[in-house]
Image (cartoon, rainbow, N blue to C red):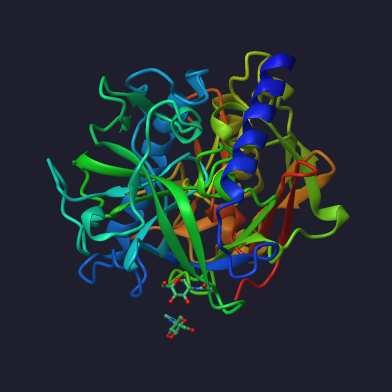
Amino acid sequence: MASSTLIFSLIALILIITTTIPLSLSSPEQGFAARLIHRDSPESPLYNPAATRAHLAQSASRRTIARQNYFNRVMSSGNKWGSSLISATLGQGHGDFIMQYKIGTPRVDTFGIFDTGSSLIWMQCEPCQKCYMQTIPIYDPAKSESYQKVKCGSVECSTTAYTSCTEDGECKYRIEYQDGSLTDGDIATDTLMLEDDGLSGNVNLSNMVIGCGHYNLDPVEDYSPGVVGLSREPSSLVGQIGFRHVSYCIPSEDNGNGSSVKIGLPAVITEENTQTPMLSGKGGLYYLSLEGISVDGARLNIPRSVFDMTPEGDGGVIMDSGTSFTLIAPEGFGAVKQAVLDALSEFKPVEDSDKLYPFCYDDGRFKLETTPEIMFHFTRLDFPLAAGNTWIRNSQGHFCMAIRESVGNFNIFGLYQHRNANVGFDFNNNIVSLKYTDCQ
Ligand SMILES: *[C@@H]1O[C@H](CO)[C@@H](O)[C@H](O)[C@H]1NC(C)=O
Ligand SMILES: *[C@@H]1O[C@H](CO)[C@@H](O)[C@H](O)[C@H]1NC(C)=O
């Protein structure tokens, strides 16, 4: 364990050294901020004006379910960099927010799903052996002067997730998802340009390692050109640029305006009494240390083993930008559900007609202000869930608890439950800060 951590640190250090030097940032020490757009907002390239509210909630819920299958796989493969020829099947589920950026020389517009749970920046590329439909032209690297394929044996190839080598020395990647979607193509480097969110204009990141997918399947018709991975793995956006601070803030409004991710100095890490340790775990995921949950001030009787990682690194609590609704392992979920039902015993729970949430209330007297407060007791940080982040209206207008039972022995602190909170990650001190704020 200790030696693998050391090796990981060494490789990460080597990668930081080798990949931060060629960068040409507008202000390298400074970092940047990029806007995040909710996939269903009118400004999103994925916006579907015909989709109803119920349809969107259904999709978010479907993504949450797919997401836990994805994590089941990430966590059950101990293999950090996927050095095997073909990676484990992963499971679909990328997230609710997209990040717009430009790629190549000359720069062309593209975007990817903002995903703290994945480790590669990839997009569909011409020539397509097989590409699914997307809303913007597919990237054509032949038109980019800065595009270069990565060779086998290079540090870029060996430290990137899901790679393999062909007999003629080309570095390839392949990511398969549980629902049958997959992306397969070349590992390459190219320049990415992020439009800075009002801080210092734009930022050019040269020699960024990307996956250029020539064979892509998307049976769920997500239409996103790709994914921007922001895990702690060396091949993610965050890992490659080597900044040690990341923060993001998601407002509660559905249009997602005001959401941004800040990397480097602009990242907001809030003060001491809002901080909890960030634990290391599988897949470069962001693990939290959760000690318990209380409802209306009464600590629930949930064994620590429900929230703790096992010595093998299984289970635990992940903080994830790609999961809409918090998932709690069965034993913990049962206790939360019972305590909430008990606290609201004056109302009769009804089944969710959309079949997305565990229970709902269809009673004119039900008010958010009088719902019980669910408190997450992270190590050194008590974080109460705002009522607006705990309840959601289904398509019938009923109030439903927006927390679900997970399928495995792990827990995910989902996006809906940390809306209107500034989330700060400090990799130097291994700290997560969480503080309610106005994200606009
Ligand atoms: C980034 O590259 C683009 C295209 O070459 C250029 O127009 C822009 O000025 C560059 N930005 C910075 C900050 O260097
Ligand atoms: C979001 O912000 C942009 C830029 O500030 C603005 O033009 C747009 O109208 C806003 N959209 C909504 C739905 O508020």
